[in-house]
Amino acid sequence: MPAASLRLEAVVVAAAAAVMALLLSPAAVVVDSAGQHDYGEALLKSILFFEGQRSGRLPPDQRLRWRGDSGLHDGAAAGVDLTGGYYDAGDNVKFGFPMAFTTTLMSWGLIDFGRSFGPHKEEARKAVRWATDYLMKTTAKPNTVYVQVGDAFRDHACWERPEDMDTPRTIYKVDPSHPGSDVAAETAAALAAGSIVFRDADPAYSKRLLDRAISVFDFADRYRGPYSSSLHAAVCPCYYDYSGYKDELLWGAAWLHKASRRRKYREYIKKNEVVLGASDAINEFGWDNKHAGINVLISKEVLMGKDEYFQSFRVNADNFMCTLLPGISNHPQIQYSPGGLLFKVGSSNMQHVTSLSFLLLAYSNYLSHAGARVSCGGGGAASPVQLRRVAKRQVDYILGDNPLRMSYMVGYGARYPRRIHHRGSSIPSIAAHPARIGCSAGAAYYASAAPNPNLLVGAVVGGPSDATDAFPDARAAFQQSEPTTYINAPLMGLLAYFSAHPNPAEWADD
Image 1 (cartoon, rainbow, N blue to C red):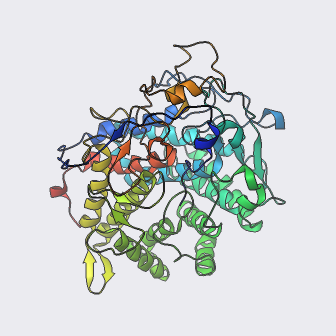
Image 2 (tube, helix red, strand yellow):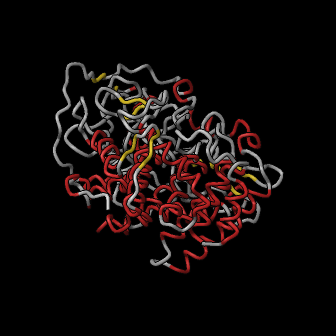
Image 3 (cartoon, one colour):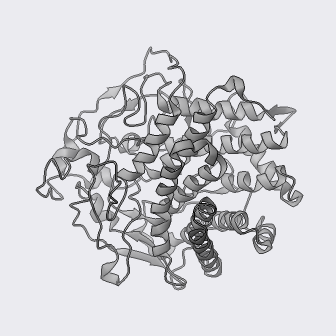
C-alpha cells in the first residue's frame, strides 16, 4: 500500500543538493528495554502534533507557537470556504482522502478508549473537531465533496513554509459527473464516527455531523466510481486508491450503522457483503484499504451477541489477527524485524505499525468483553492478552525499545529524529525569519545537514522501512523521515489505553 510519501518529491525538489545521510546503524546493538514508558506524555505529544499540521487561522490556544496562519483564502476563487483542516504530511496540500481516514481513526480511538484519555480527552476532541469542521465545509454543497486543495505537483516542486506558500491552491471536487465513492464514503465514515465522539459533549453538533454523513454516503453510493479515475493526475500518484471504492462503501455503511443504529445500514451490509468484497485483502488496513477495519468493527456486533448474521465478519477478523501474531503467522506480507518491528514492504512503514496495532488492541478488547479467543485454525488459538502484548510491543518500539534505542516520536525521549522531512519544521519560523522564503530559496534548508529549527512535537516518522531496523535521520530519505497524520491518528487510542493500563501483569481476559 503506498504512503503519502510515494510522491515525486525526491525528483521535483531537484534544486536541493543530495545531503549526506546520518545513517544510524543498529549493528551489534541489543535491544535494551527502556522500562515503563510515560504513555501519558506520549499521548499529549501525539495530539500536539496535529496542531503543527493545522491549516487556516490558528486559535488563541495554539500551543506550537512556531506555526502561523496559512491557507486563509482556500476555496475563495471558487466561491467556497475551504479554510481549515490538516496538511497530511510534510507538504502544504490538503488531501481529503487521508484526512477523512485520519478523522475516522482519531474518533475510533476516542469511542473505544475515551475513558483512558483522562485529562487529554478534550484536547483529542479538539483535534477531531478541527478536521470535522473542515469536512463539513467540503460537503456543504449537496452531491459534491471537495477532496483536495492545492496543486500537488507544483507544491512538491517547492520547499517553503505553509505561511509563505504561493503555489496554486487549486481545488478539486467529486460530483455526479465525476464520481468519487471512495473519498466520499470515507468522508461519510469520518463524519459518522465524529458524531459519536460529540454525542454527549455537543449533541447539536453531533446531529449535524450524522445528518451530513447520511447525505454524503447516499451520494457516494448513488454515483459510484473511484475518484482516481475522475480526477486522474490531480490525485496521482499521491493518494491513488489502489483497492478501489467498494471497501469504503462497506466501511461507510458500518460507521453509519454504528452511529445511527438504523436498520437500513445493517441491511446494506448484509446485502453487499459479498458484492463489495468484505473478505478481500484482509491483511491490509490504512487510508487505501479498509477491509480489515471493516471486519474488526462489525465483529463487535457478533461478540456482543447483537447480530449473529455477521459471524462471517468475525471469521475474517480472526483470520486477519492470526496473520499478525509472531510465531503463528506465515503470511508473506507480514514480517517482523530483528528488533521486533512489524514490517510490511513499502515506504512509511509506521503507518502499518500504528493502524494494525490499533486493530489488535480494539479486537482484543471486544474479545475480552465477550470472553472469547482468536481461532487461528489447526487447533491454534490466541487470547486477548496475547493480541494486546503484540500491540504494546509495537508502541514500545516506537517510543524507544528498539535496537537504536531511539524514539521515533519527535520530542519524546532523549534521542529522536532531528531532520524530519517537513517543510514548516525544517525552515526557520516567521518569528525567527520574518522575511518571506520563496519556493526555490527553501531548497537550502532541505539540503542542510543541520537539525530542524522547529520541533514538530509528537510527530511519528515513517521509521525503518526494511528488515534491518536501520534508520537514516535525513530529510532526503522521505520514506523514513516524513511524518503523516494517519500514522499518529491510530496511535492516540493506543497511547491512551496503555497510559491507563501500562502493566501487562494486571491485564485480564475477562
